[in-house]
Image (cartoon, rainbow, N blue to C red):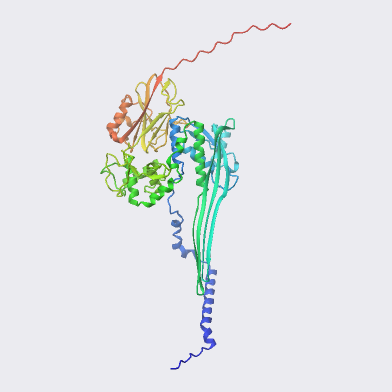
Length: 581
């Protein structure tokens, strides 16, 4: 058998497919260029454009800005309240950053920290006044006009805060690693780098009257923030074609969160030193551990939705937001979502009505601790004994009404009512003196307060025509009367010797229609049908039940006015000296 060679194609036949392909490519290019030169009709993109409103919205819910010292600020607030610190006016200078590497609003963070330490204690009021013309806004312009016309009174602050971002040392530590391989058809590369930056903040407390910095009232702290990344590059060739790709993972700890942490720590130190309270007790909380939130996030990711919902559901029962036993609603019910929303509002979170990580963190943060080595350990829900109890996985299981596995049920809501006059623990007043009170409820509630004078006459103080809103937020002090308001509506002045007092009631809903008719009347008017606060408390209990109302009461003693001291006798007139001779 003889092999016959295939006859060679003529040169034109060999070039015909290539020339045809080039011709089609050129024609396609001309068509595309012509199409790009023609204006598009926006009306034909209406369907595509209709997705713009939905696409422009963020996909992640906003959360409250929480730092390592958020719980410490609340602790300081309670400590200042217990120390009976009077309201102090404070202002602040601009907090500059000479390095120009930390573009954050440090002054606003100071205002927020002071506000969070004053929710219960009313310890600080910030005087907001701007002298820089470039920074003045509508409020500042109106303030200036009213000040010039003597129509507004600007109170002088007692303290001011001064300081600066002292330094930003970038890349004080830097670690890099690069490696790669090369072959005729495959190339690879790997890189990793880590960097450490140190940020320092210094704040001082000054006396506004003398414009001098108070010795010892200073805070100088620094924090470390890190960045890191790693990447993998691969490039290869198969025949005449090449392929390449790269994968990278990076992280960068933000300077904003770092500055907030430094600001809150500095304000706790300055306020604690100025008020002379043991502020270090609030800095030793386990929530200040730097790995606290990260560890809770790991636990959150390990569990499923049912575990998270079960933990939150049991916490709501323990805190009195939901009933226990068979009456506990399931997690997918409207009652559960409403109770969860109230819990989130009372704990200063963004209200969503859903079990998210911030809610899980707030529920669980009271049930973790540090071990002997200073590391976080998982306690879970604690029983009466120290042994840890793991939560049940099924959130719809009935919860015993007598108490949870991790402790006895706390009251649904509590009222903290105390006297806010200057002297600590004062309960005795003279006739004609003014009394200042503050009331705080543990949960958002409908609150009403009643006054009983030395003769037993009773009248309702709040709500009244000035303060008409009966719903008060949880964990926020209500001043009685509002001594920071130019029109408080009433004042509490002692009238006659004897025993006086104030009773406040808190309920989960408006119970006015269930009360006796005299208690439904107008405020700030005597109610002759009731004598003494005990009668008012009994009327509430009889109307709504003892479990549906919480009571808070404070009493003080009124004594007669002490006579004014007699004026000192005028010095005897001296005879004029004889003229010198």
